[in-house]
Amino acid sequence: MVNTRRYAGPRDLRAMQELTSRIWSPESRWHVGDLAWGRFQHVGREPEWPTMLWHTGGRTLAWGWIELPGHLELAVDPARPELVDEVLGWFEETVRDADRSVVVSSAETHLIEAIERRGYLRADDGPFFVQLNRGLSRGLEALPEIRLPAGYVARPVGDEDVPGRVMAHRAAFHPSRVSVESYRAVRDAWPYQGDLDWCVVAPDGSVAAYCLLWLDDAVKAVVLEPVGTVPAHRGRGLARAACLAGLRAARERGAEVAVVAPRGDDAYPGPGRFYRGLGFRDRARSLQFHARSASDARL
Image 1 (cartoon, rainbow, N blue to C red):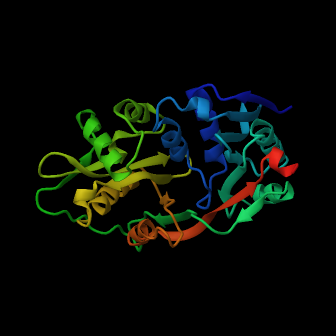
Image 2: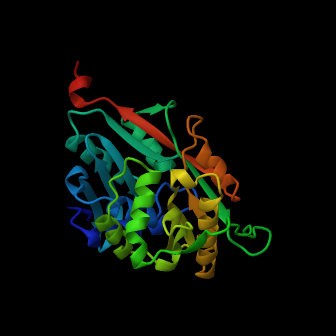
């Protein structure tokens, strides 16, 4: 018998991550690190995020995460495709008076089939993301050398760096709700590892760029999330250096593949070019589907 429960904190995040890891592939939309970063990067947003888990015998089979007013992210075990309809049904009951959207990977065909069957229409215009990956072997896929301008230093983020790291993120992704409190929560989350959280420090001691990597030991895959550079320091190869330092550290921990999901549309091509310049290659892309609100559909 399949049971459901509402998300109630970190224990349920681990249950969501267990499913995400178990069904992960290089084309997947979600990695365990994406979930940790997504859930903890902001403080006080739980009321905006209705989340449900489907489980049996201690095993998570599906989860749905709504971002109000009307967006759904989900994961469903391909061995239980009938649960996609249950997740979508819960979404539709929860969000009745707003237009609804769902995003999945182009490789997640078991999700796409159910979404289209329920009348959702694919949106072919607007922003989308690409799933990119690269191997981390020491042979043909060797990592480039790290090069930094004089006076800049790459190092793991220490406790004393957290305020500066937060300031750098807020500058790189303005406006941002990341705070010292939320970043400390990120650092306390599984599977965060301090030696995979890299920054580049400028000659004046400020954090100029950064790259946080999350390693899932079960699948030997590491995701880069997030990566950024303070605007005043852009164009100097600092984010590249932070990424390469982090990828080397991840390889030493046993990672065999690295993944990242930048924007892929023509309106914002820079991140994709950046990661392809690091040896990442396309594997899949995000697909967005829309449905009108229940009240609009009756008109």
